[in-house]
Amino acid sequence: MSGVLNEHFATNVYFDRTFDRDAAKILPGEYYYTGKDMLIVTVLGSCVSACIRDRVSGVGGMNHFMLPEGDTDSPVSASARYGTYAMEILINDLLKAGARRENLEAKVFGGGKVLQGFVNMNVGERNAQFVRNFLKTENIRIVAEDLNDVHPRKVYYFPRSGKVLVKKLRQLNNNTLVNREQDYANRLQASNVSGDIELFS
Image 1: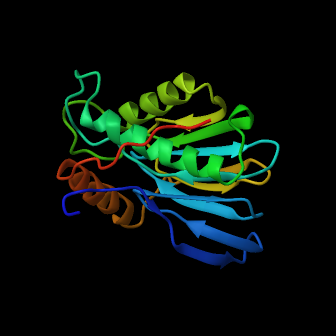
Image 2: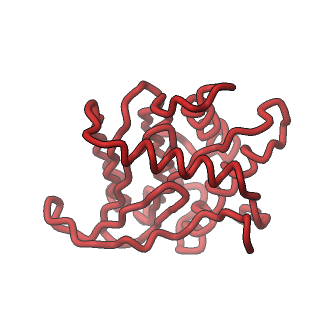
């Protein structure tokens, strides 16, 4: 399926010595969920991550996505479809793993103003507004957020307990994050959203 960009289940799992547990690192366009006592980590610039968990069972996960630039006036723009897909695939996998919809809660992060190449509208602000609106529509309560600002963030999420540690990256020693997000944004602009996903209860 050339020209199509999907959310991908993250495969970078390693043992984190600092936190003494297995950890999954997710990159732009990836997500991860687990019922184990693990850590999920990502670094966000303009992108947004939703950390969603069942507060009773501890099954939880995180995604990492960006709305591509697009027709912001259209109520069903390609960019909104992409963000919806990124959210729904995580929620559906959590429900399949035993989470109950009425127990879901979310913490949301990112949306920093770190990419200079977007002229129409600050993509970070659009990402932040999108994730808030989506969760409100789905009746998933946001229990914590750290959105917008100008700093990239490193997010450590412990789904079993719901704990999140956020480190603001005030100095970037290299351009890895910006380059990674710019490349991801370029791929999004050149690709289609594939597949229709419906949320099931």
